[in-house]
Image (cartoon, rainbow, N blue to C red; front, side):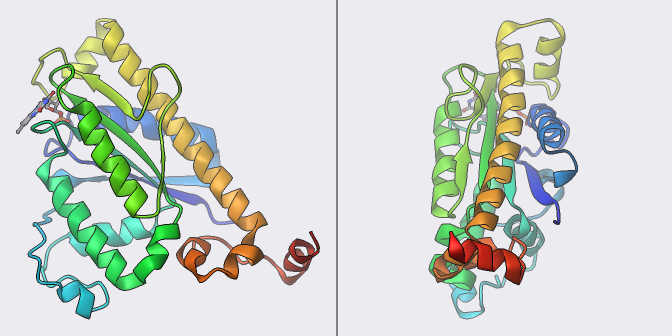
Length: 252
Ligand SMILES: Cc1cc2nc3c(=O)[nH]c(=O)nc-3n(C[C@H](O)[C@H](O)[C@H](O)COP(=O)(O)O)c2cc1C
């Protein structure tokens, strides 16, 4: 069985800042939970050039291909191949950073143009980590926007364990604006920062566990799901059961 793939996307323009710090914690825990059953890869949006959607609808006429020549297709293809995605972002102006918005705007139109409605049953597991400099300053709003993105892309949003993590792993840097602000707070034993780290860890674990559950469920119900064309892009990520196993599924 090929390993599940987990893509970590750091959505900060600072490639080694607080978002990346929490992302690495979550990915490490996901890897620990799934072991060799999962391959983890990280992409920094800071290292890519992805411009905004120009609303030309060329993707609708060209099988999802965007006319803008930049790094969009590179990340879209990784995203589309992933069984699970964890986004880690800073809050910007009470919402998600523009860099990530540019990517998800184009992702939605590109994949809906290419796959049509079957995107709605792609069953990709999606976890969200979000932190800002301040408290009550947009973390929930930014997380909610990404949960909505997960839903519209046919994903399964998951959060971490209670009580650290309600709808996402979230935190604040106590007004620190340095890229290592959170790490410093953790080193000082700051309780809020420690809660954020625990939330990131349990979120990583839950993403891995849910991805394993979804795959096992898909494998067990392969034949049944194949009768509904809507699941085709999910089933493409699974291994087709042998004829013997398919026969056994049919008898149940
Ligand atoms: C343009 C801009 C807008 C920001 N808006 C917010 C905000 O609305 N709420 C907040 O708590 N922090 C805000 N911040 C602070 C960042 O979210 C914070 O510094 C975060 O820790 C940066 O994470 P990073 O190191 O991963 O880039 C903003 C920062 C910038 C540069």
